[in-house]
Structures are given as structure tokens and as C-alpha cells.
Length: 219
Image 1 (cartoon, one colour):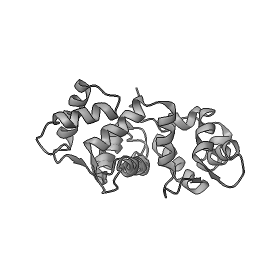
Image 2 (cartoon, one colour; image 1 turned 90 degrees about the vertical axis):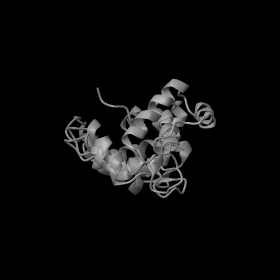
Image 3 (cartoon, one colour; image 1 turned 120 degrees about the horizontal axis):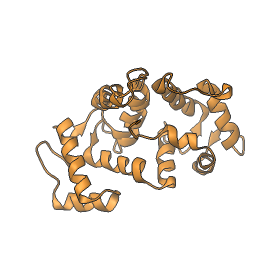
């Protein structure tokens, strides 16, 4: 889907309208923009990072771009793009995590379908859909649980990405403190890992979890 210079076929358009929250006009516009930035029809991590950094000029977006790369399945290109939005922070790591989540088939590239499906969830999905997406972001080894070390990786990337844009309370001013606080609230059975249900319920009581993973462009 989305080869260089191509348009979406009627079948592809129908499929995307059924599996996303975008209408035909929006899908056509997103596809044009995607193909303009990625003529090959696939986004590499380097490209993804570059775009992401444009949204975080006050931080280093390379960390966030690395996370996003795993989500979109692109490469260093994703990281390069991501950093343009976060110049004062490191968004590359977070972008890499996100990339891995977008990259559904784990082939190292994000196709238009992978991109638009992820964007649909993060921008217009239900709370449960967004939380499931966030869970997949934190669950780095895809074993169905989030460990403290996995969450620390993501939170460190988020803190590095936002740089000095946020003033945090004393009990959240380091990634370690934030992770310990989250686990104290969410890990009901105290087994050192979070199930999807624990993560969902805990996140609904802690808006930061959802807000921190928002892919919306800061105003």
C-alpha cells in the first residue's frame, strides 16, 4: 500500500475507512503528505526521528523518535524528523519506541497503512484503545507485562524529550521517582510487573500516562 507516485486504490481506501476514524478526504490528504515526505512509500526510523524533532524544538527528540520508530517500523529517518520538533530535548529514544509500536510487522519500515492506523488510535481512538496502544509501547519485549525496567526506559525517554519544558513536583522530578510512584499506584498485587488490566485501570486514575504519550503537536 502506498508505492511511490501511486494513489490509494478503491479497495485500499475502503479498508482504511473501515479500520480508522478518518474519512475519505482526510485519508487522501494524509496519503499525499505521507508520499511527499516518503516517496518510497515507507518511512524509515531516521526519517521518523527527523520529523518528530520538528515538534519538540526545546528538547532532544531523538529518544522519543527511537520509540516511535519501533511503533511505525521505520528507521533513523524517523528519528531525524522527530528531533526537528524537539530541538531542546532528546526525543530520539522515545521516537524509537514509538516507531516500534507503529511498525506492526516489525520489518523496520512504517507503511502508510501502519502510520495512519496508529495515528487514528492516538488522535481519535477511545480511551481504552489509546491505553492498549500505550501498553504496547511500554511492553518492550511483548510478553504481556510491563516491568519497572521497561517503564523506566520509556519514562527516561519522555523526560529527555521534554527537556526543561515542564516543572515537576519533588516526588516526580526524576524518571526513577516517577516510575516508583506509578508502580505504587498500579501494581495491585505487588508482583513487580503490570498486567494490561492493571495498567488500564491505573492509567484512568492518572491522566499523565495518557498525556505523556500523546502524539499531538504542542501548540
